[in-house]
Image (tube, helix red, strand yellow):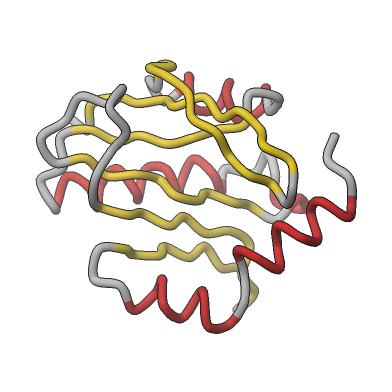
Length: 142
């Protein structure tokens, strides 16, 4: 549903060696990798910090990103990354996990619902020059 030009602009603004190096070196962020035969097939990026007002938490963690290579969809990679993410949050005494998901991504919304996430609000998400709406979903870590 997004144009190639909007995706290109988004990727240029949000991704790049310096941007990702800063994220990886941030003590409030961790990145979990899923590999097969030394090839990256998916990753999850977790970030601790302030949550939006619609999320009730004492020590919240955001799943900032959870991506799986399309060739690996339906093979359990996303489930393993989610399980590993929740385990890491437990180790760090987080009480609530939240995420933003594009309102027009039913596959992802269904996946998160299977893990007990419920919609608690929304926030804007700029994709290139297009302001889109993300659902904010949350659940208890325990």
